[in-house]
Length: 162
Image 1 (cartoon, rainbow, N blue to C red):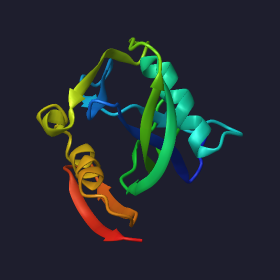
Image 2: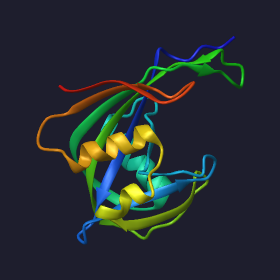
Image 3: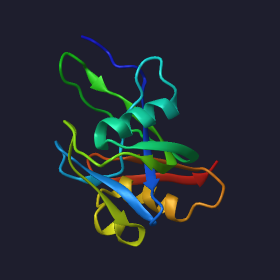
């Protein structure tokens, strides 16, 4: 049986444009609204991975600004495709500034759109995504660390500044 590494490393970006709108994508497989992001690939640094994921998911170029949140989903999941267990995911959340490009969809996203900042929480409903977006709304200068599990139900276990 194949084994994943101890942690899956992922990134996401809260992208703001000049109109104070936030870029949201709707995932094809889960049907939920979120900010763009995904797993870091072999040999990539975090910021290059984020720029690649954003370009792939919604077609735009961004400038990666600040790290605002590090979160750990410490729940493990049943594996697939010959893998035993899917391990803990560590997510690095950044703020980004829109630079150029036209919104599009991808194999991973069914919709992408700009939403006024004050309306984003009407779209994002998954508890860990809501918590991470609230971190953005309340960001001053300290990075927030979140630890949570998603199964059998969502439970925020730790929330603190680092």
